[in-house]
Image (cartoon, rainbow, N blue to C red):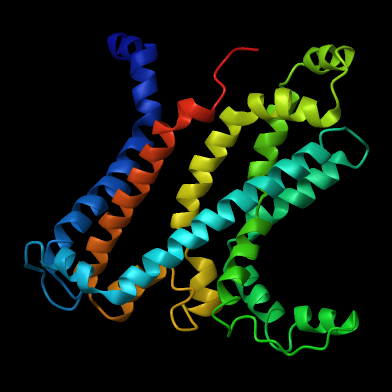
Length: 297
């Protein structure tokens, strides 16, 4: 008994015991499903009948699928437009909130709130109603003298931008990360720059921005991954319409897997998406040394 208690008291053993629930959950709910999905990607499988191994047929079909190619284009446009805009707004708001005041805590909570609720089904439904022909947006335009019954969600030029604006609105988490990084920059650097006669713009581009590049890089990688995995906004608000102009890759993958019962094809799409995200992340890390400041303070 004493021997067992002594063994459990060791730091290494205690660490394993405390992390064991997470490890078991990770294996059961991540590794095992991923392995099954990888097998299904090489099978002709429709959920209702047993999977039949078909080799690379699913991947070959993807090369002929025009809708799939369209969804990839839409997803790239969505991610590469929404992510920079989100980070830009997050940085601007973080700079505005840098100075402490009595209302700072309230403002930070208010700006962070959309990041918590923004991805919910309820907000997506609300956003859909706001941009409807009889929604709030058109009525507000009418109040300022612009009479319009424009169909924001029915026009191929504006429908995707409705989704992009919703994503940009959820800049709270990036804003808090930027705010934390800004507070770590020594005030003495700005004081020395003022002595040398530097302007506010010069201080931002020569001190603030270079020292923020590691944080910008972190936010960029995380938000880019989230951008390619976006699902709820497109599925709830537009279902990929009109004319597949808002059909994100994840939505099309869901349709293939659970609406068209082409689950093997959907599994193959999932692994291709994993490859795309991996290549983009690898590309970001490959270019990191060219624009991320890694010098010490």
